Image (tube, rainbow, N blue to C red):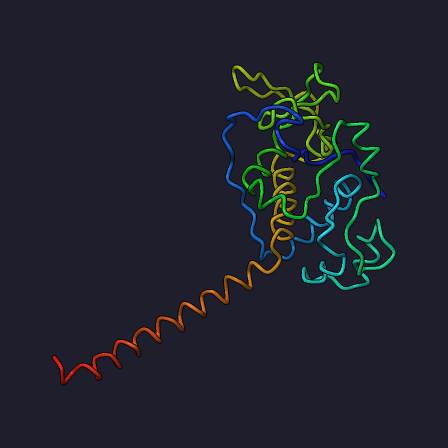
Length: 231
């Protein structure tokens, strides 16, 4: 099982440092794209789950992404014995707090608390910084207390904060477009997990509004019928 340390540092700013005014990019995620969601789930269990749990999401819930129970068991069930168990990481919170100063946050609703645009930009703006304990920093979250877990995919970059200029130090396994797509898939999955019923809720909402519109017309016609003799 591939477990890299700390994919997303989402603890309060008081713990890791102040956030910057870096411009956020629009996240191109789409939570109805099952292929993207499946790719995002794979990235999460391979690069995030080692430290970041999703205790309010069960492995069985991944079946809603078009995966069979056997596919989940064979490819995604890394930290549990049964698909009905929550997606909890193996990292002990007490040990994590001792190592990193704070326990890695649960990611179940992180997309709702931080926003998809923040996550999409954050995961693409890590850079090398020898002044930090981890050797990494982030343009969106200055003095972030975590390493860049996806650096083997993106490569290493440098950043001049005053000039806001980026430079490439070493290439990663993916091209820039491929890496942006991978981050999009991961953010897509995080957004989906934050509210799995969002698509159904929106569809129901549209139907309800349509029915209310019809009832409004009927109510108006009934009112005119009742009051026609009075007016």
